Image 1 (cartoon, rainbow, N blue to C red):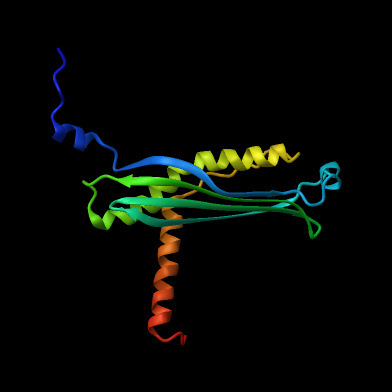
Image 2 (spheres, rainbow, N blue to C red; image 1 turned 90 degrees about the vertical axis):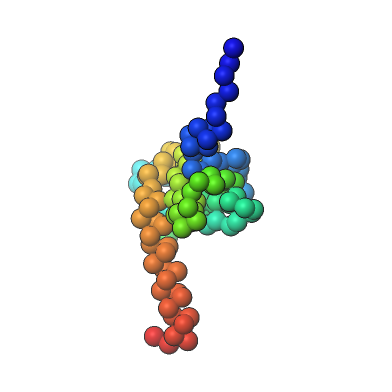
Length: 165
């Protein structure tokens, strides 16, 4: 005979953040100088990677988190390849999480959970485009969140001062 678990025990065991669904929202891969770019592999290209996180509220304690990744490879001022990916997930925040912790949780843990999947998409796209797979380095999403918070604070202060500065 199975004894049901009390509801209070279930609630405390729930994760603070759960991803209900994840998906590719936007994706682009360009290899504009193929096949020439594929034959000149003696010198590695310069690769610039940019990553941003965004979120929007969908419902009560439900958020869409978007991880925006842009990677551009060039050699001698010539574009070798470009990958742009917006990988998103719908995150549900547990009701037990205090309101002041919701934003950091969504903006740090959401992208941290989505990143391995986005990293795989970028690696596969570059490999399928004829290049070695581009393996993105792990990201410190706490530092990224803090950087974005500082930029938002500076923007608010600039707006309050009438843009003079």
